[in-house]
Image 1 (spheres, rainbow, N blue to C red):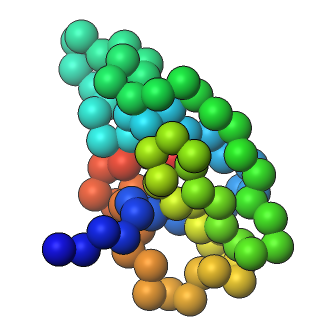
Image 2 (cartoon, rainbow, N blue to C red; image 1 turned 180 degrees about the vertical axis):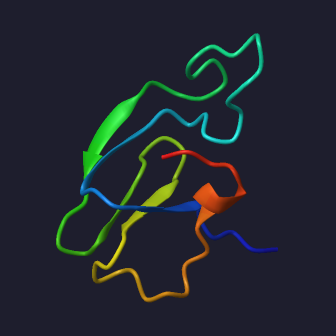
Length: 80
């Protein structure tokens, strides 16, 4: 079983997460209704930041942590 965090490639060093990236949409959608409070984070010199609530990892595109081997969860529907 793979326990790697969900990873999203982003193009800005300032990102937010509400834990609801994969549950968006539908007529009954309410922001973060099944997620967590929205938090803003800043990607530092490591090139990535992890959400303290849900462990989602945000990797800065072209940054030191973007080695080209990171599967981009946003391609499969997770929004950053």
